[in-house]
Image (cartoon, rainbow, N blue to C red):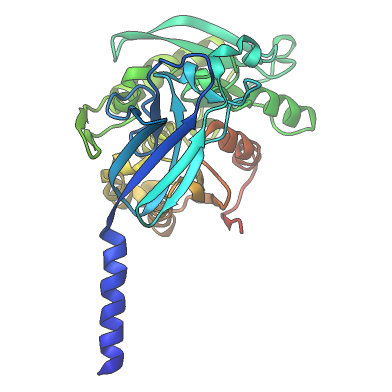
Length: 394
């Protein structure tokens, strides 16, 4: 009987930890002399990385700036300080973008930081980094399905202009962050062009890459096929789904344009879709919804938490899917997100003939640096005759 009591108490404690809510108090003890009177915000995975969220403003308290974020469940949280936008984010005293701050929250906590610099005070911190193989197709390409326009980028492999070879095509979301540091919203980019220039020079298969800019304020809707209500301790906001319209644009408008204007291999085996976070979600959904169009998908740090219906969709269509999927998640992104990705990947793998490469990076984060780190591995695997591979880095 005693052992049963101990087990029962253990389960009660485990249940308490699972459902407990904690308060994170963040204190800034020093800031640069410049912009002393400016409002400072915190943006993180607890508020959908909203750089100017008025519910997450620091308040003066004696000689410090303080914010308390309440009702946070046990998880890993990442955040940065801004002055209202990602162009005005914190930096080192040399203007170098800082890494995300990370905390594993398992109790109420108080953390202290200093801000050494602001990125917008260092004009030389960002520069154009796109290679000569990157071009802008159009700064205002019309998207009839969404009645808006968007900048479209294209990467053409070295030697494309002087040859007759046809190439696979990869469609990547968040085009601002793929090739050029100057256009990147978060101060760093994936380095897709430099990565491919290097791999192709070493004899790896070449590919055309098409980058589609996100709509910034409409990103949460355009990259989600389901209605999503985002909540935190202070507010809630409903994002109406536009994911199907966005994919209709890719399939019915953009892909036919690319296939007509450029020398492409248009079959599903040669059509790849990839992205990160919300872009990872819509890439995965696209490969499930349109298996005859997209035969390969790169699913980086997918925001499955915004679309729980993706699991039931996976269960219902998995048997019809025969494709290649690359899944990435960093452990520092949070246990809930890691488990969501593992669950989806396992549902897909156990009920289909798909080829899956799933990696959980023990030191990985939710940012361009992490996705850049794994892009080369993704590209080499997805372009080759692959194999199923599950990796957890210790």
